Amino acid sequence: MEDWIIHLVEWGHYWGVALLMLLETIFPPIPSEVIMTVAGVSAARGNMNLGGTVAAGTAGAMLGNYMWYWLAIKFGEARMQRFIGRYSRWLTLDWAEIERGQALFRKHGSIIILVARMLPTLRSLISIPAGLFGMSLARFLIFSTIGTAGWSAALAGGGYFLGSQFQDVEKWLGPLSTVVMVAIVGTYTWRLARWKPQAEVAAPMPADVRSDRHPEA
Image 1 (spheres, rainbow, N blue to C red):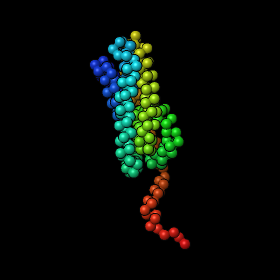
Image 2: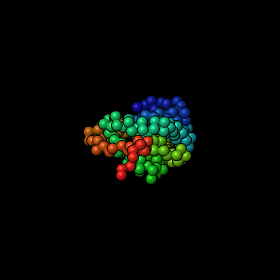
Image 3: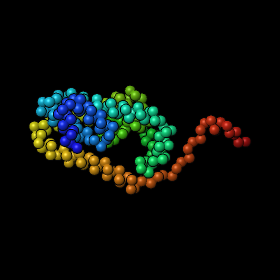
Image 4: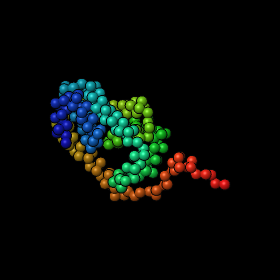
């Protein structure tokens, strides 16, 4: 996978970095660890400026982050509940877990977004609960941008300072991308094998139905 990433960065420079980070956000198995490290190496070789590289990576990722946030808002909680109920086995997720996440998100949403933007895979998916649970756009953009910029800067900085050892970097980029992919697949397989649905809790009765009932004497 790392070969086409290297070629696109060398060909597109800042636009290539932004495009790759956008794709990584939409399709998490594309590893940002490889994208931004390669971009940092390219900056060290004089093809780009390090600050511009970080900005391009952050901009591309944030475009994808906002897309997921917007889609989650449009999808809505009611539709999400039906979707989870239908595919909970393959998602290894049930609505009780969603509700616990929602309560946690309402208390610590800003910190959750900030930290999640620096964690592989989760950094892309965290936009969905942010939109689904009604986080304000301003908070979402502020904390997402800070976390995304920090992640991009750390990776690009690592590549930049290893730039003089480019051949050595190439040797470990391949295994790194493989490790990331294996970790993602392994985690999902482990959850799939162990997952069991929790006891269902009766859904709350709609307000219009409750209002039609007369109070007991």
